[in-house]
Length: 137
Image (cartoon, rainbow, N blue to C red):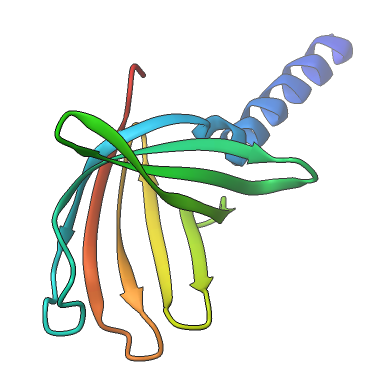
Protein backbone atom coordinates (compact mmCIF):
# COMPACT_ATOMS: atom_id res chain seq x y z
CA UNK A 1 0.00 0.00 0.00
CA UNK A 2 2.80 2.44 0.89
CA UNK A 3 4.61 1.71 -2.37
CA UNK A 4 1.42 2.44 -4.37
CA UNK A 5 0.98 5.79 -2.60
CA UNK A 6 4.63 6.67 -3.16
CA UNK A 7 4.44 5.79 -6.89
CA UNK A 8 1.20 7.80 -7.28
CA UNK A 9 2.74 10.79 -5.48
CA UNK A 10 5.90 10.58 -7.56
CA UNK A 11 3.88 10.41 -10.80
CA UNK A 12 1.76 13.40 -9.79
CA UNK A 13 4.87 15.41 -8.89
CA UNK A 14 6.34 14.59 -12.29
CA UNK A 15 3.17 15.76 -14.05
CA UNK A 16 3.15 19.05 -12.14
CA UNK A 17 6.84 19.62 -12.93
CA UNK A 18 6.25 18.88 -16.64
CA UNK A 19 3.50 21.50 -16.77
CA UNK A 20 5.79 24.13 -15.29
CA UNK A 21 8.69 23.78 -17.70
CA UNK A 22 9.39 25.51 -20.96
CA UNK A 23 9.55 22.31 -23.09
CA UNK A 24 5.76 22.01 -23.00
CA UNK A 25 5.66 25.19 -25.11
CA UNK A 26 7.96 23.88 -27.86
CA UNK A 27 6.50 24.00 -31.35
CA UNK A 28 4.95 26.45 -33.78
CA UNK A 29 2.56 29.17 -32.60
CA UNK A 30 0.68 31.39 -35.06
CA UNK A 31 -1.40 34.53 -34.86
CA UNK A 32 -1.38 38.30 -35.04
CA UNK A 33 0.97 41.05 -33.91
CA UNK A 34 -0.86 44.38 -34.10
CA UNK A 35 0.58 47.89 -33.81
CA UNK A 36 -0.80 49.94 -30.93
CA UNK A 37 1.22 53.19 -30.88
CA UNK A 38 2.32 54.59 -34.26
CA UNK A 39 3.59 57.74 -32.58
CA UNK A 40 6.14 55.76 -30.57
CA UNK A 41 6.83 53.29 -33.41
CA UNK A 42 6.01 55.02 -36.71
CA UNK A 43 7.45 52.22 -38.85
CA UNK A 44 5.27 49.54 -37.26
CA UNK A 45 3.08 47.30 -39.45
CA UNK A 46 0.46 44.77 -38.40
CA UNK A 47 1.75 41.24 -39.03
CA UNK A 48 0.54 37.68 -39.28
CA UNK A 49 3.27 35.84 -37.34
CA UNK A 50 4.54 32.33 -36.78
CA UNK A 51 6.86 31.78 -33.82
CA UNK A 52 8.90 28.57 -33.66
CA UNK A 53 9.77 27.77 -30.02
CA UNK A 54 12.67 25.44 -29.17
CA UNK A 55 14.41 24.65 -25.90
CA UNK A 56 17.73 26.18 -24.87
CA UNK A 57 20.35 23.64 -23.83
CA UNK A 58 21.34 24.09 -20.20
CA UNK A 59 18.44 26.47 -19.44
CA UNK A 60 15.37 24.51 -18.31
CA UNK A 61 13.18 27.63 -18.33
CA UNK A 62 14.68 29.07 -21.52
CA UNK A 63 13.06 29.11 -24.94
CA UNK A 64 14.57 30.20 -28.23
CA UNK A 65 12.14 31.69 -30.75
CA UNK A 66 12.56 32.03 -34.48
CA UNK A 67 10.07 34.75 -35.38
CA UNK A 68 8.63 34.77 -38.90
CA UNK A 69 5.91 36.83 -40.55
CA UNK A 70 3.79 35.87 -43.51
CA UNK A 71 4.22 38.29 -46.41
CA UNK A 72 2.79 37.56 -49.88
CA UNK A 73 2.19 33.95 -48.77
CA UNK A 74 5.91 33.55 -47.95
CA UNK A 75 7.60 33.24 -44.57
CA UNK A 76 9.99 36.12 -43.88
CA UNK A 77 12.35 35.70 -40.93
CA UNK A 78 12.27 38.63 -38.52
CA UNK A 79 15.00 37.31 -36.25
CA UNK A 80 15.59 35.13 -33.24
CA UNK A 81 14.90 35.90 -29.59
CA UNK A 82 15.53 34.13 -26.30
CA UNK A 83 12.76 34.05 -23.71
CA UNK A 84 12.63 32.98 -20.09
CA UNK A 85 9.54 31.17 -18.82
CA UNK A 86 8.28 31.87 -15.30
CA UNK A 87 6.17 28.87 -14.25
CA UNK A 88 4.63 30.76 -11.30
CA UNK A 89 3.05 33.39 -13.56
CA UNK A 90 2.95 31.41 -16.87
CA UNK A 91 4.72 34.35 -18.54
CA UNK A 92 7.45 34.27 -21.17
CA UNK A 93 9.71 37.35 -21.12
CA UNK A 94 12.33 38.65 -23.53
CA UNK A 95 14.53 41.73 -23.11
CA UNK A 96 16.09 42.97 -26.37
CA UNK A 97 18.85 45.54 -26.72
CA UNK A 98 20.91 45.93 -29.87
CA UNK A 99 22.39 49.27 -28.81
CA UNK A 100 19.89 51.19 -30.93
CA UNK A 101 16.56 49.65 -29.97
CA UNK A 102 15.44 48.32 -26.60
CA UNK A 103 12.20 46.52 -25.90
CA UNK A 104 10.55 43.93 -23.70
CA UNK A 105 8.10 41.26 -24.82
CA UNK A 106 5.82 39.53 -22.32
CA UNK A 107 3.60 36.63 -23.39
CA UNK A 108 1.12 35.03 -20.99
CA UNK A 109 0.40 31.36 -21.65
CA UNK A 110 -3.15 30.08 -21.22
CA UNK A 111 -3.60 26.58 -22.56
CA UNK A 112 -2.98 26.62 -26.31
CA UNK A 113 -2.86 30.40 -26.63
CA UNK A 114 -0.54 33.23 -25.67
CA UNK A 115 -1.33 36.91 -25.41
CA UNK A 116 1.02 39.74 -24.67
CA UNK A 117 2.72 42.91 -25.71
CA UNK A 118 5.92 44.54 -26.84
CA UNK A 119 7.00 47.53 -24.77
CA UNK A 120 9.66 50.02 -25.90
CA UNK A 121 12.29 50.83 -23.32
CA UNK A 122 12.93 53.08 -21.54
CA UNK A 123 9.70 54.92 -22.52
CA UNK A 124 7.43 51.95 -21.63
CA UNK A 125 5.25 52.70 -24.66
CA UNK A 126 3.27 49.58 -25.62
CA UNK A 127 3.81 49.34 -29.38
CA UNK A 128 2.41 45.86 -30.14
CA UNK A 129 -0.28 43.53 -28.92
CA UNK A 130 0.40 39.88 -29.70
CA UNK A 131 -2.08 37.00 -29.81
CA UNK A 132 -0.91 33.57 -30.95
CA UNK A 133 -2.20 30.01 -30.75
CA UNK A 134 -0.46 26.66 -30.92
CA UNK A 135 -0.46 25.20 -34.42
CA UNK A 136 -1.71 21.61 -34.57
CA UNK A 137 -2.25 21.24 -30.82
